[in-house]
Amino acid sequence: MSVTKTGQKGVTIYDSTKAYNGYNFFCPFWELESQIEYCWLMDMEGRFVHRWQTPYPPGCHGILLPNGNVLFAGKLKTMSELGLGWSEEFSGLGGILIELDWDSNIVWQAEVPYQGHDFTVMPNGHIMYVAWEPKGVVPDEIAAKVKGGRPGTELNGKIWGDVLVEIDRDGNRVWEWLAYEHLDPEIDALCPLENRSQWPYLNSVWICHDGNILLSTRYLNQVTKIDYKTGKVIGRYGKGKIFHQHDCRELDNGNILLFDNGTHRHEYKPEYSRAVELNPDTDDIVWEYKANPPSDFFSAHSGGCERQPNGNTVIIETSKGRMFEVTPSGEIVWEYVNPRYTQYVGRLKNEIWRVHRYPYDYPGLKGKDLAPENLAWVNRIWGPDAFVKDIKPCIF
Image (cartoon, rainbow, N blue to C red; front, side, top):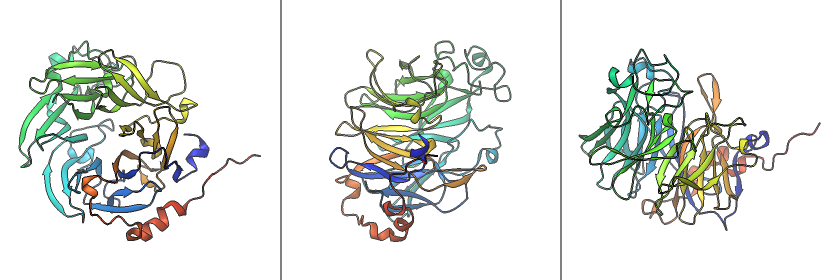
């Protein structure tokens, strides 16, 4: 994002005739135990209309359920408190799933040790989440066969493999998938520039229309599809075309939408990110959005994108705290830059992992009081009237 763009805060672009109008739900990243934590619901003009107070910082996000409650992954412990010797690569840790009602009361919770990054609600109401668990550590005989990665960069001599876990609403584990049992050490090779501490590094999970599971396997630079019943890998997509991606999801047309971070891309150019739509039948990129110039849009980590019913795509550039909406032709019709910064490991940041757009007629919002006046003091500080628009660079 350019210097001029970085200086702008709040809603900077909004074309109500072209945007898919609704409410934007997000949970900003704040430092563990630094302050009161909230998830926010914001209208298209940048006015906050509701908030949920959460008992823990996000790890990494939450979603608004059809009943109006929020399902939220909370961060219980820091990496050092877990005592497993993890490095900063093991980011996005959670540890507890919580359901909050409209008034922020806890109506359900389940401890999910080592949960990280993503979770999804399954059609049967169960919850599937991504985790790093000691039982997922890759056995030495398999680890020795894993191709790629920087030699000698295992974590204390071990490679941590990802685990997928499904729990029921009583918190019982009813299904699990250990990555090392199903990936191919040669075909599913690690990015040559990454450490060999993790294989494959899952950062998103999605239940497909056929009941099988789509995974973003970040360190493999590919999207991986597995059979739910057997755990077998049944699809690999995007190899050599996407790099360190996040937020892979199946669209209604069967294609795959994802956030291509672009880290370690195989070209000698400034780094840039894209939103990409892949056809899984041909493995071709059939649509993409990138900035002009491309380097104006880049998040080395995290990020996400959601396709809207009108064909637009809402994108989150996590590292800049920027969310925006583009048409199929690439026109930006809505943009918001998070104005709130917090101190985190010695620096200021305004990061948001994901944003979810909910239409005005979403069932979970029916009958709810969404008047911005209910959060008048919040909107005075962080709302649309608090920021100068059309910032222009100084000319000396």
